[in-house]
Length: 267
Image 1 (spheres, helix red, strand yellow):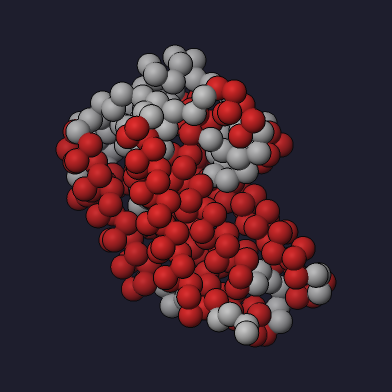
Image 2 (image 1 turned 30 degrees about the horizontal axis):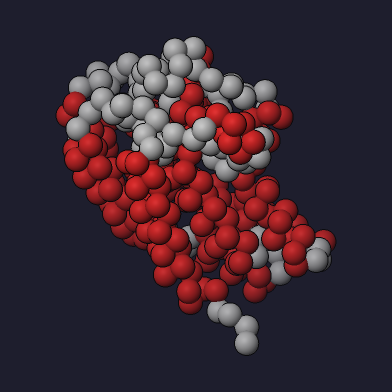
């Protein structure tokens, strides 16, 4: 019997999110990499509230989401993969790889374009980095990211199954590589050859701009290597490195209302 992936999309993604969140939250609590500098309850309450807020905003502002775009390309047979008529497995594999590369390029763009950086810097204003940081993005950035993803899906003709798989991989990867999880050096060395580990991505959250403008990947590490944005470690070492940006250092900047107004404030 053929599975209706549209019907199970929301429950499947939510289930994977909850399971991954619990696993990484417990893991980083048991094996922490860095000592946290701020009260965890304040950050978690507001970071998690932002997830709910963003979900509502996306539903209210966009007439269709990534999964809807994939369904349209499938029904209308539009996009590159529908034109090439590639085998199913190859289409799924290439779709995930290309979408991950687009996310890498998009991430670099949000750092290099001043107007986009004002939106993205809210993600970097978190002064600790843990599993909740992986979901901390401004709603306007979320809308722009979704529009880029929809455009990519339409051009490539990404199938529904590939979109669901990629969304799950992206969410789980973001929580994993943002987690405050200690991974033994020997294991991290093997893992980072393929994927973005917490030690790789933590460098990207350094307060030093020269370090922050590296390690943009979310899932695969190959894009940073190809793009020459791969930095092995921070200058101050992981235990001592400072997280965040210089602009927003006060504790109350971790409140939801403050986070939402950060792109529009200079001080």
